[in-house]
Image (cartoon, one colour):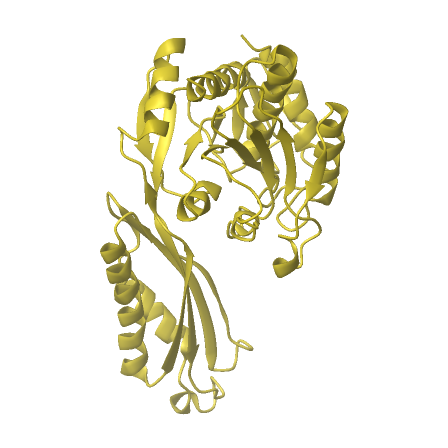
Length: 372
């Protein structure tokens, strides 16, 4: 059994370090020093260069202690979402939370703290295992860019265990959706809104009409959609000649994803046609879906480990993307294991101290099962 309080103390230390996406340098340096202090050499890759970030992914490796055993990757991401600067964690009994004016950063620093606890245990007890890559990625929250820009020819891994998100020990995220980033540029015609409004074409009005027709939110059990950003216009007294609308769509089913994207485009196109505006559409694939069946060896191992510890195993489909999407896309089977956090990306985010210890127990048990 891991000492949950020790893991919690390290988590609190981690969340006090600002590490917004693209600005992970201070966090990366601390983690590198801590790994080096355990006798594990570290290095950084160049994943930050395409996004003009401060630092690349942090890599380290525990050399295998037994021949012929599988090579594993342990992964968590270093970056956090906004508002994530000046975090001051508060512990109340079993719960760690922020002061309420920032996120906590348990997504994903709880995952990092759990990995460190397990790494220390492996180094101390030296059970039989293959090589274990430890990878702390950058810019996960803004597009999985750390995972996307790894050099996949430079290392080998038979599977990946991604510590990310919340949920209780025994929960195994075995599937996640594909996602599209959607951008719409609407062009109308400027005019004085009080003198000659009839000569103008309001791009904002077209956007409003189109969005009002869209099906958004939970579309079905596999599909979601959202409009998240609207910007445009020049002044209160000018008919707005331009408007930018940004959104997304996600689905576990590629046909449903395409259908939702078409629906959103068609709603805006119809609205533009009605008032004489024009529309340009940007559609970018953020990541592809993955789904490991319940009888996949990696899922079976995680299920057996849960049973061994007395946890109720539960395979579930996730609603968001993670580095696991990218690893699976590159042929590395990956599942997402729990960290005991709740309400990520909100001011109500929290982490259960008890669950931190139980999630570390679970990760260690999964690693042990994989060596059999």
